[in-house]
Amino acid sequence: MAFCLLRLLPLLRMADMDLSKGGEMMSSVLGDIPETITPTPDETILAQESVRRLARFAVGARNKPLQVRIEPEGAPDETVSIPASAFHLLNDILMQMAKGNAVTLIPVHAELTTQQAADILNVSRPFLIEQNQGI
Image (cartoon, rainbow, N blue to C red):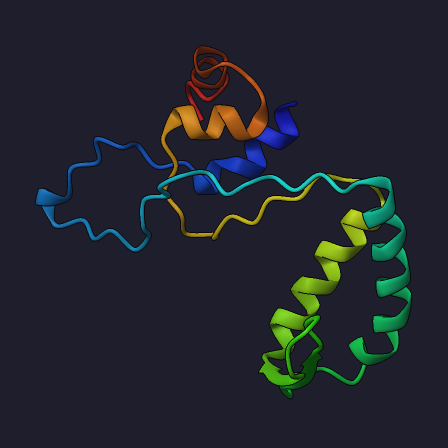
């Protein structure tokens, strides 16, 4: 648990931060916690296949945008350019889903209330505060 708490510390910002003393807020307060996606068994299998098929593109996708074709049912195909970094992030998400892990995407510079941080870690707010005293 301590490892998870320490990894979350860069995300924690006190909601009552005093900006009037020249401090700048470089991050934005996270409104609602993004939905955690827990893959179904079928999604886990599909993610495993997706990771396997996308692996050959990951090596060549260093800094160049990738073209992704979307084929929605009952609508015309569309090609979308995505940054290579987004492709790698998508691949990481799929790898976690392929392992059956739940996934939530939270911006690095997001500010969380102590309650939001506790909810993400699945601990109580008092426990989180107690663990972070003196850090």
